[in-house]
Length: 293
Image (tube, rainbow, N blue to C red; front, side, top):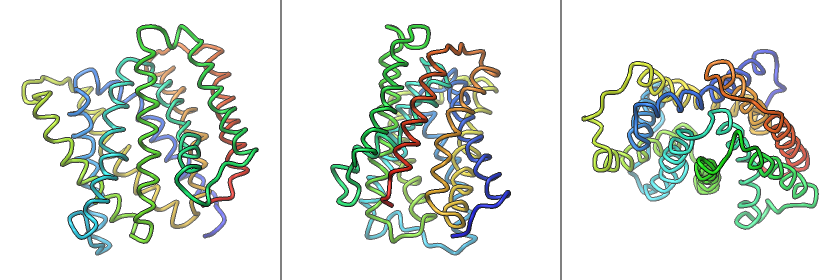
């Protein structure tokens, strides 16, 4: 792994920009698309650049091979379930709030890793980072302009969605010797298979009349915010390593707030800004003291 140069840093910022922009696009897409259909179309279009990449690099896709159960389970927990839950939650809360809540994924993951991974135990300082980070989330629930009796359940659903990302990440460790491109493509294909019947049974998308704006947002989510973003992530991981790539967690909620405020006209309160600072501080303390892989 090489030390990051200006181009590498630019790619990291671009990745944060794309992922940060995904939340207001999810919000717009929910105006016309139900959650299962939204997630289905998103992963379908995400699979296209991934399949092209595997074809170009001559990487065998093992989705339906001997390890198909692992690919299927990861596709369910790391893609299908969180995509649906985040769509449900973002439909009723501010898009920037979804970005902030999703930024706590490293903290949620650290708690799960403590119980399920031998070499990822929480130290005192790592625990302090987790506690500080989640205290920022708790502070958000005291801001009645942002989270109130009408939408607090949807904020919790969004947090549960982020937790499934963590569960999927832990399950992915079973396939750590497989190529990233194969794992991501294979799990994406399985997520399509999981979401297809739910979309057709519960939502009948053929009867809907989506707006052009929602459709464009959904296409952006699939092709850019999922497919292309994952390719950028692969490049950063292979050139600069995991530690550098995880720094994107600091930037995503910042971009989420910028997009939410300027493009969606969402209200930003002082408690939101303070919560963001506290959460990022918690993530910083945790990462600074995280010696695990």
